[in-house]
Length: 259
Image 1 (cartoon, rainbow, N blue to C red):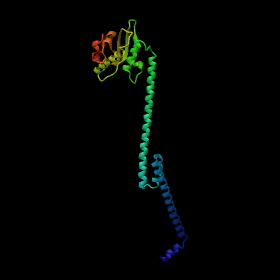
Image 2 (image 1 turned 30 degrees about the vertical axis):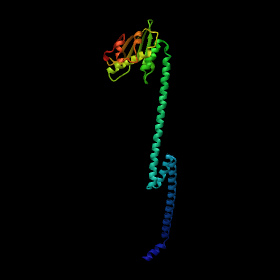
Image 3 (image 1 turned 120 degrees about the vertical axis):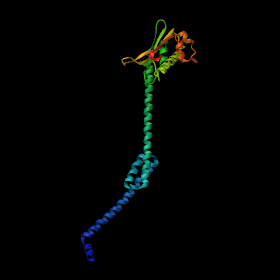
Image 4 (image 1 turned 30 degrees about the horizontal axis):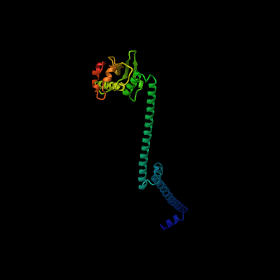
């Protein structure tokens, strides 16, 4: 056996293998040292970025560290924390951007409403009695979704001083609540025009989408109430109950569905 080993050791192939193994061992040692050094560099850089609050760079550095040493708990835990902080930061950023877009959208909508109202005011004589009635109707019936001219539809005065005003009625929970809403809105319109002079009487009509027997939906005038100026002047709006509005009207017409 000793002769066998002696012969192997004297073989060139044996020393070749020894050299190869030695080279591999040295290469592995060098590699491990380099990996350890690189790992420490990435870990240290990741920790520094984390402390600075730069979570995106921290995640990049710590991810490289974990790739080099997947079982290192310190690197893994720090990477998890950095990912959580980065996610929170991104969520806050996204929310801030969404809030900014919403604010800009609201500002744009507000500008468009103001521009529409300005255009609306220039479409008639706002200083005339009928013009003041139309403005009052808009102020009572306005909403954020329709143009002023679609809410306060028209207001005209004839040679005898009678104003005919038409506005768009508002929806409610039931036919009874819609009817009571009509009474309340017309009362508020009368309250706003109580000090307006230059007319003798006024009829206020409100439209509402109604379906006919054929299933067609049209905006019909579902309520019309007539008031003389002298009767409006008698109303004490500070204590007046709008439910009693039909009792003080000179006359009124109400769509059957709301009676």
